[in-house]
Length: 168
Image (cartoon, rainbow, N blue to C red; front, side):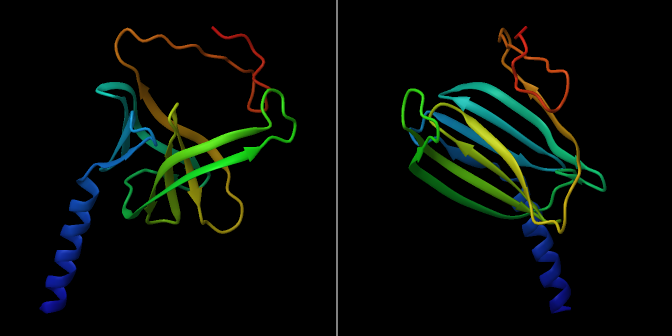
């Protein structure tokens, strides 16, 4: 009976942990990212009080599974960096400052999602500990911009591109 009660409490606490928004800010504190893990992974990026970008249903479809679909959050960890990276072929500067705050969300199923906030922007990436090679079939996310926003797009003819296509 005690074991059953312990298992039930663990399940309830695990579900409650998934519902709590996870936040991280840029080093200067101006940008803030909120990640929500429910039956999918959503995020909102804010600049001060203004929402500037939203991402809904963030997922990565592999040949045999979809990472981010019905996610089960296991652990949240935070890190930061402030380093000078040396350019191999310097054009304007010999070094580039790499300064960010990060949050990593580890999920059941051998994958994680890492968000990095820089003073000038944000990035995310999927990380896996899956054995062998993986085939990425599709990245899924629905981006939402505030009403009245403008965006430029460089449509490329294939996956391997130098991104030298005109912007429209």
